[in-house]
Image (spheres, rainbow, N blue to C red):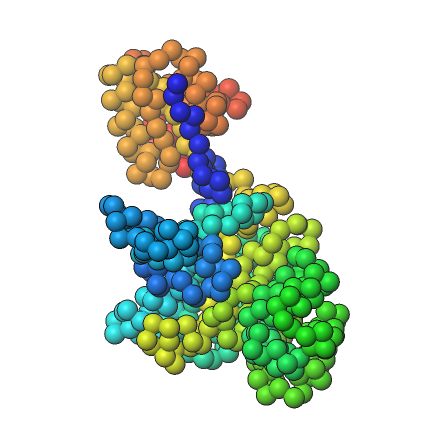
Length: 456
């Protein structure tokens, strides 16, 4: 019995219509990237494990897909780890490479490796797939595309301002109104951890806090307690759970909470600068919101943290995110190289546009005309005309076989091809083309010049 075909969980096939819609999003994002001065690069699908491991926190490390070494990988396996069923230690001896988890860490590696070829500040964009061993669910996949833009070599807060404008530009172009660009600052989170006496547990604190909108206040408090954060410290956090109001009013509240933390005050000043600039410049459709519980759980953020939420009418996780990472390239031996970047979540953006019916009707650029095949002589004559149509930008094709007319017509209908050309001996002798409108059924005889004009 033949094996039933399948694909791994968390991956997908895409039909022509879906690919066309995805390309519409890609092209919109790519166009905005280039308008803002970003240059394209690409990096390998897999990296050395040491490049990726330890950069995303414990939770991130567990989601990295490891690649088994080639050949007899068990011959070099750590015997004690194998016998002791110590998977972490064993993995290190049988896997030297891993699929990339995101595009930011490979980009940091790229910058360090190519630093002598790069003109700084360096603005790059990258649109490539990434892989995560996550549990698949709506809007979350194991293989998905990221669309990233980063600037390295500048610690100017004007970069953060531009990234907010970039988000607004893309979502406005996609006609996606009501998007919320949420912002926080890692320095504020560090300041809060300092104020509650949990500076040594900053990562545990931020990972728990980042789950607030998913699991709720009480569960977050329980997780913090389980990580060793004191009840007294958690009580001091209470104002954060209820912080609301305008960006400006939240800033004023934070000043009171963080008045004893110099690090926290720096974060407040940075957020105030960004907000004031955006107020002056204005946004087209998006809204900038301060969210002091936003942490994103990634170790490498050091300043601003971004997360983009879909319109409130849509139940969907974040559709973009990013932040400032002053120390990332230092991991690879290149200290004092500040960077900031954002990412667009293509797959979730697709789902949102689909649910709201925001894809243009013209997004799926179909074949515009199918030439009916009456035999080899007629087919050759058709292909000469098709060549001229294609040179003028008309999508045209010849049915490959001289099958029955009904079969060829049904093929055009099933593919939603709006026109067919009937070219038999009579048409060849008169050098005319019979064009049939597949919607109205109307037929007309046209010269090649008129046919091109009609279809253009």
